[in-house]
Length: 347
Image (tube, rainbow, N blue to C red; front, side, top):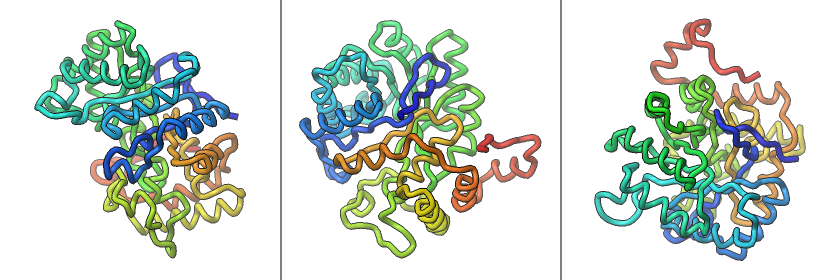
């Protein structure tokens, strides 16, 4: 049974698994490597999601140049709006010209209207700043977002891909002026890359900012199709240069060690490697929802099988040990005295 988790310091509850629609459209080579799902197939996938209790659907204005939002909107037609949660994002370049990127008032107000129209709705449940804009004053961004919440066009606001100081400064400014604050942070986090734990997770715990996880299978590195003696499949996103996770960001020896343990735990549990990797994430602090993607019904049902059961503490510890890598400064220095800098409690 799907579980629902409170989203940060808000009253909103979201499913522990949500559905990412970056596979909708495939309007260019990068997104075509993710998928090219059109409306009729999208309707089938959304129906399966709703049957399993997954009612949060994530997209972004830049996914296939707006096609992902448009297809999602058409696929949701006929479904009562209060039965679904829609998450979308803005900040990155959309169109031409110097003002068609960033988190300025100009760009946000322009993009929210486009997103609402493409999605066929009059409000967004969770509106993310897709990345940090170092050119626009944070006050301008947050005041604009607060105005959107006050207007009813946005229910909750969230960040994505921020550094620790980006998020903390934003929270401080919201508190200073009494504006709506970010209740979630959409981040990359997986057994292949655990840097999120070094600073952003402790910040999220302290400030009650939940995480929504993108690419939980590291763009396929943790799908079970790849391993120490298994080459990258030719039809994978990695091989087709559609991975948002740079290959050089992954420590291959740690990855192979992790996959070895994943395969062992999969044998013990009767689950797939991908299901084990997703379930591990569901046991981590701050995680409110994991965004799963799927090109077809079979992939979707396999990913949905990650919920409704739990790994043992021993299995989690084995995966933690295999995936551990050396931290960078100042974290290795802080970890020399864990009584002063206790890590998040995983067990």
